[in-house]
Length: 73
Image (tube, rainbow, N blue to C red; front, side):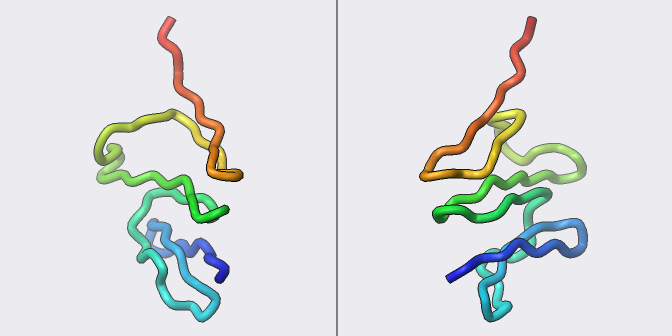
């Protein structure tokens, strides 16, 4: 079954082919679900919730996603 990103009220979530929520709009940012995985961001008042692991992340491809951390000089 396909999953599609929806965006409403400044939040992202996912629906299935019937339009039913798979994941309600809770996220500050989201990418397409590929192979059962998606990159998401959860913020509250401009701050990330929990530990921010990476500065950037690409979509998953075969269970892997390219990520980037800023390196302090």
